[in-house]
Image 1: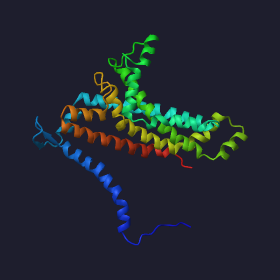
Image 2: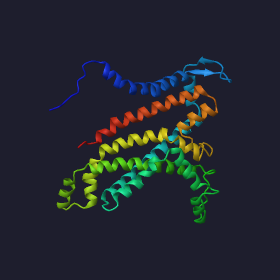
Image 3: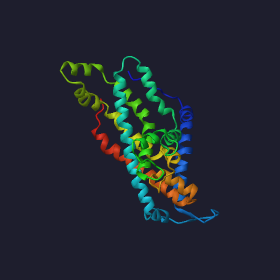
Image 4: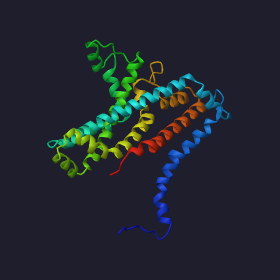
Length: 294
C-alpha cells in the first residue's frame, strides 16, 4: 500500500520549500537575469553610465575570431576531459569491485582526489610539470622530451586536460562503483554457468546495466568541463600561451574582470549558458533513447 504524506494546510509545505526556492532564486535566477540584462547594455570607458545597445554585444561577439577560437578550444577541452575522466573511472570501479581483501582501503584512496578543489588540483599539476622546478618535467627532459607548456600551446592544453580529468575521475568512480554493486549477482552467476567469459559478461550484462549511470555522468562531466574547470585553467596556464587554453568560462572572467568589458562578458555568459542548456537537452533527447533502465 502506497503511503503518502498529506498536509492539512499550505503553510508548512511552503515553509519547507522556501529555503530551497530562496537559494535557487538568489544564486541562479537573479544572476542569470542580471547577465541577460547587462548583455544588452553598453558602458563608457569609466563605467559611470550605461546605455541600451540591443544585440550589438552579441554581433561583436560572433564577429570576434578570438571568441570563435575559444569555442573550438572549449569543445576540444570538454570532450577530452569527459572521455579521460569517464574511462579510468569505469576501469577503477570494475577493478575495485573485484577486490576482496583491502577493498575499503583501495576505495578510500581512489576517492581522495575528489576532496581536492579544482584550483588546488591545478596548482599540484602546475608544480609537477613546471619546466623549471617540476619533478615530472625533469623526468621528461631526461627522456628527451622538450617540455615547456609555458611556450607550447599543445603541451599546455594536454596539461590542463589531464589535471581537470584527474580531479573528476574519483567522482565517476564513486557512481560507477555504486552502479556495479547494484547489479544482481545472480545475473553474473547465471551467465558464468552458461560459459560466458568475464569480458563477455561485462559487455553483454554489466555495461548495458550501467547505461543510466553512464548517461548521468556524461551530462555531469560535460557541465563540469564547461564551468568547474576555471580554477585549473587560472592556476596552470591563465588561458595561455597565446590563448591556447582560454576556454569560454575563463574568457568570460577575463574580458569582464580584466578587460572591463562588462557588456561583452555578460553576452558571453548568456551564450555559454545557452550552449550548456542546449547540450544537456540534446543529451537527454538523443542519448537517453539508447539507455535501458533495469
